[in-house]
Length: 253
Image (cartoon, rainbow, N blue to C red; front, top):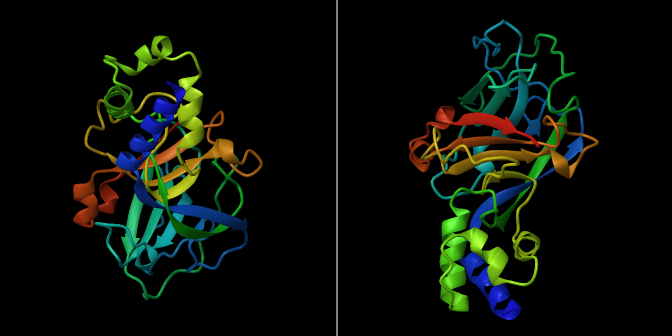
């Protein structure tokens, strides 16, 4: 039965495989125009620096030139910037901007206290196109995975919890160890340490614009207690270029 289960995992991966960009980073005082996490943003002259409701300057979570992102439906021009409250409270305050490239930009910015931010350094980023698979924390995982297991293994499980009785091995760990799920991505799947918020108030925001799982690098990142920050959006808003309609949120253990 274990061989059949491994076959089911393979089928599940084929059905949920999704293109994304795996993000790599180096600590660097990145130039204003560089793609990065943290640091000084590309802010055209005349634009106000984002601040929280209490007037505190926000920190730059991500800056990426969209001309380098080749994912289905994504706009291919403009510089995407995601700012979040530097005090990093919950619910999280944030602003998402997309500016035209090539504009004259500001070079002086307010001083920001990064002591409560997910990271205190600036990271120049590079990204490589890859694939990922639906993680176990996705609200769609249970129904889809049970459907595949029943199909491949000839069972009639009603939900994913029935796997505990159906198999005499750690099926959960086997799935987790066989799917590809990068800790920092552009595109791809969101991941969660607790409940998937899309199974409720964020229904329809099934795309993940950006994800950072801080458990992957305790030394440099801290989202609460080994948490994940995720940027959720609908495909309709991506296709229509409304990236500012995304929702930025985070959870932790």
